[in-house]
Length: 144
Image 1 (spheres, one colour):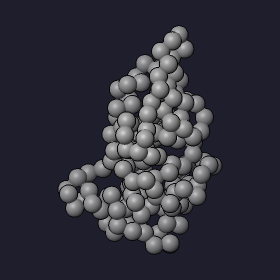
Image 2 (cartoon, rainbow, N blue to C red; image 1 turned 60 degrees about the horizontal axis):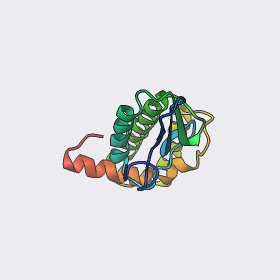
Image 3 (tube, rainbow, N blue to C red; image 1 turned 90 degrees about the vertical axis):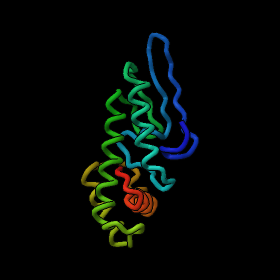
Image 4 (cartoon, one colour; image 1 turned 60 degrees about the vertical axis):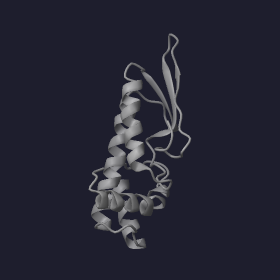
């Protein structure tokens, strides 16, 4: 699927036997915070739209991180990314970088959004890459 997930080498494996299932790798983090330091958040959201079309009738989805889930894990990942983008946008006020205090605030916001989730240390890791992409999108007149 290309860029737009935890890395640039995202792929999806679909088992189409009696027990349909999909292995989606790092396109979905289920119940954990996502690694966003690779950038490509807009591509990631586009890939999730593609996944919704591909996997509409697949009942079992195995993410790269977290527990297996249903089709709804795609929607949860999309909502997580949109929430993260809104938080970065509000905290950064359009700046392509966040300072340490802003990253602490972002971590707090996302931990409130997904309480008890693992991998909290990754929240701040992606902050500057996402802020940079949001600032660039705003310069282009694009919306995330």
